[in-house]
Structures are given as structure tokens and as C-alpha cells.
Length: 163
Image (cartoon, rainbow, N blue to C red; front, side, top):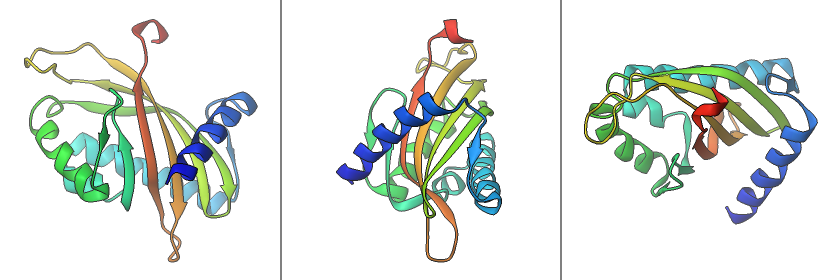
């Protein structure tokens, strides 16, 4: 997975330099399948369904949250970490995708950058948070049956000045 992380870093830097958010290069059926996966991610988040949320990840996915904390345990660890969050600080949250950039590295591997906006979240004390914007950098892989899943996921909140 270390080489996959290195590949993620290099390709994400290259993709930011080469094309603006919103651009997609690659076979149209794969671009559509990736967009459906991102829609499933967003839908599961907005329903606060940790199990459905975890299903967009590979069984051995690497997940790093907005604070730089990795969630161990792959898909199961992602579900376990999100269940209490969806029941508390994110129970009223709503996540919206604002831009997507897809770059195919190989026919079965894609680097994906997603800009997002979240409303309705609460801080750890239960107080409402202002809207938050962020960036998700991901490596997606296509399995032997043709389904795209998230293998590596890094999430970052951006400063409010970028809103």
C-alpha cells in the first residue's frame, strides 16, 4: 500500500496541475460508474448510514479523516468509526459534491479529486458548526467484476476563506 500512497500523491499533484476540477478523461462508462459510486457515498452520508457508507470502499481500504487520523481495519474499520459519528456530530449533516476531477492512471485505477461542502454538522460539544468546505483525494480501483471502489481516501477541510 505504500507504493499506492506514493502513486496517489504523485498523480494528485499532476492532476491538479494538468486539469481543472470537473474534468474527466477516460471511457465514458467508467466515468459514469465512478460518478455513481460518488453519488452512493454522498447518499449514504446524507442518510447517516455507516454500513452503506462503508460499502463504497474496498475491504482493505485506507481511510484518513480531515484531521489526518487513519482509521484502521479497512471497510469494517470505516464503518465502525463512522457509526458513532453519524449518531452524534454528523447526525443532521448534509454533504454536497461541488466539483469532481477524474484521471485514469490505468484502465482499472483512477485518481479522483472531489470538492465538497457540508452543512448541519455539530462540534464535539454539540454546538452547530458553520458550513464547511473540503477536498477528498482518492484512488479508486475497478475489481474483476467491473465495480469501482475507493481503495485510498484522504479528506481535508479547507480554510473558510476558500468558501
